[in-house]
Image (cartoon, rainbow, N blue to C red; front, side):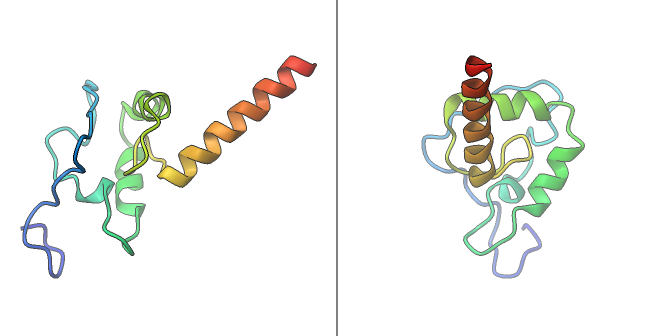
Length: 98
């Protein structure tokens, strides 16, 4: 039981999800619900857990490289990861011009 109203148990991971193996990751072996909130739920619980995780940077890099479209990875939601990639592309273009 997850302790959330209306939740019958741990939320299954999205189909086809390719999980990285990251030593020291806080999420290893845990209920995935905080990192994969249901529609309308806040991602803040997963993000808070990520903020103290020693694997956070490696996890974020993995998700960015894989183009992961669901869940919170390395403390970033899909929308935040999209913005990170946009910013990196802008930085790369600006560096090429300088």
